[in-house]
Image (tube, rainbow, N blue to C red; front, top):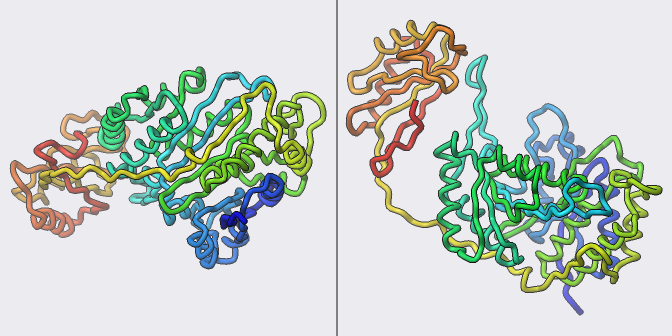
Length: 473
């Protein structure tokens, strides 16, 4: 007998239990070899006092199975609850988010009948690290972290995915015309790794025009790789323009685990009405079956789903003609067509060779000379800029000279103009002519404290191989 693969299943909140029941019914009818362990997550767990939205014993199941099929959950408003998805991705190292976005014209209405795009999104860093501070009454801050190792890993995954699945082009979206260091790093890594894949076309777009072109002519794209925040937004847009966000499943892949889910929310207002479209979770389960080396069952389910769509059996969200069917009835229709293939839409055929674990190449090791050359000191003050500059200079130490003051990123001293709108949050840049000792920064901060200047935070300024590792003001 074939050994069953253990998976962890969570029914979630809202419409989650209904679409999960539909998906599990199809998996069983398709002959998927699964050993299911159910855990409870979501709203009830949050409200029971667990800020992670998941009981500690649920982690035991996830660590044991390494595969998580998850329905959407409801995160309670207020209370500082952390995103369960972010927690799972971080703890399990699920660095790659994969979302195939495909149009099914003419059976599902869309303005883009030839769309077939895969979004590959970095899943662990960027603004999603969730490091935020309220620093003054006027200003809050979020830290955007982009690392070279994580960028290399996700970009290589995108090219490997393209090669394995016969894709012809990989495109990167960033905003490195503005974020020259963080997004610039991602773009540079993309260009370097692209050279290792001469058989695959590569291109880069600034995120705003790239997203506009994707929305207008998605048929010009194939695989798109992006940092976390852009990938989250653009993949939802891509899913919607296929016909509905309810049509897209997603995979979160790491070296030691994976999570599969629909991309939509729990829709609590629709709960218990048997009207939700289970397609997103069904297609996520197909991705799961490929991942755990059960390609035959994956092909059977996907082709049966395509056949069901072709025959006009649609849930309310995509039904344009005839009478829509309910969640349960849709699942029964898919199960009844297992073993059949679509007549018009392209049939799928997954193979074991495409279910292999993705190889991770280590980050390039480089020798870099790092030197401390200055410091940005952030102050809270309601003083006018000239008054503030006078106080700062009086409290400064000889080895560190004030070179600029900015407010919300714009230079206001020296050479500022009175019309510039300022808030209570000031960045004061101090630079030195040579190498700087940490003790000198400590002396500056002590002098500020003695003078009554309110220091919010500091950022050390470093050069790397003689080049500034910080933005100019």
